[in-house]
Length: 149
Image 1 (cartoon, rainbow, N blue to C red):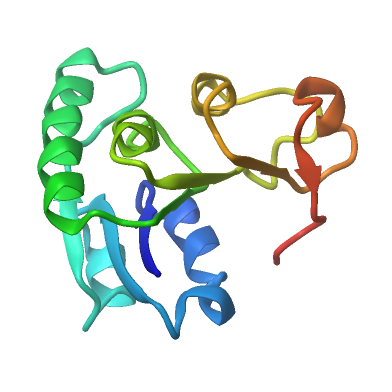
Image 2 (spheres, rainbow, N blue to C red; image 1 turned 120 degrees about the vertical axis):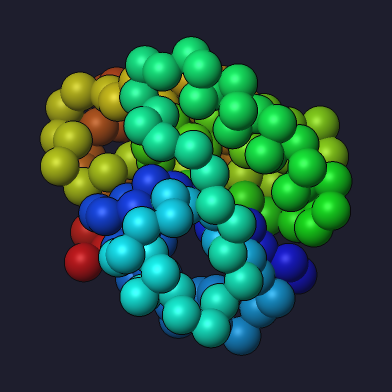
């Protein structure tokens, strides 16, 4: 199984890195911002850079859609996992066209309200995971796995 882990640097990237027991023995690659924290955390990992800022930035959404198309065409992952933010959107939609399964993990600090990225990927995500039971009112098809911290 080949896994694509896609997310903004900072907390989103840390969130994905905490899933190491799942991804450590799988072929994988990362898509994140080319920033110092990502470079340090992902040293030795296969990483593709995406454009930022992403939230509410149409120009970078277009650029990241092109990045997603190129990376997904080359790598052909079986599974795409993200905890946000907006860079996940083009990877999830194009990933579905390439036949990948998707898992989205809504961020821990959202207890009873959706994120923009969560709203955008919810309709097409194979598994939508929340960390609070209250979030199941926002995302009825979500699975509550509790905190991954």
